[in-house]
Image 1: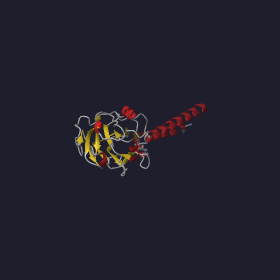
Image 2 (image 1 turned 90 degrees about the vertical axis):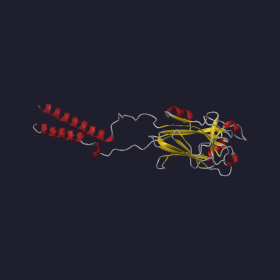
Image 3 (image 1 turned 120 degrees about the horizontal axis):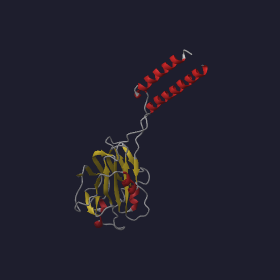
Image 4 (image 1 turned 120 degrees about the vertical axis):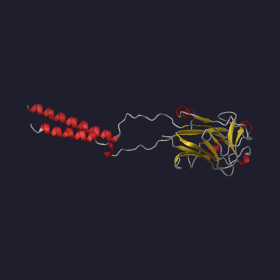
Length: 257
């Protein structure tokens, strides 16, 4: 009978020490970054909290934007030059009119020389963003299969890429002109560059152009977090176990009396 209280006292003291200790005593598992790639323009626009838009429509047709920086975004040619702003209606197509996401202009690698277009470009953000997306305008829908995209961080690590060994930015539903959307929402503001690589060196996929780049430095405020960290949960579990044990001993003490 006399030993019940001293044991409980030691247990309570141990609990106080454990709960007061730093959670760094126990390893805390860090969640892996989660990045979401989008091919659906409407879903991306509904989620991405867009704060910046570049649609090229305010520039005169023929304006050379090779290496130009617009609103903290730089456009570099990795293939044919110049990167020219063109009125989509004036592009020379053999398969029908260009379908743009916004009228009237697009950014066209190689300018108006459709036979010289190797349409690889690099888009660089002065400050990394959390979401970014752009429309790829295709004179021939099969250009999707030969156009690949990578989203990279400041260190050159790939955050997301289209199928590198398959259908590029998607399989065409027909061979008619259209445009495809590609976008990424990262877990934090880590998107530094977008690189498009047009790989068909024989046909050059005439009239691949780019339209309406959108981005945001932050999609949503950081979650304040209502779920305890793993270490805190473990210590809290110790506390519950101790309270239960203490209750059992008190109950046994009452029955002996």
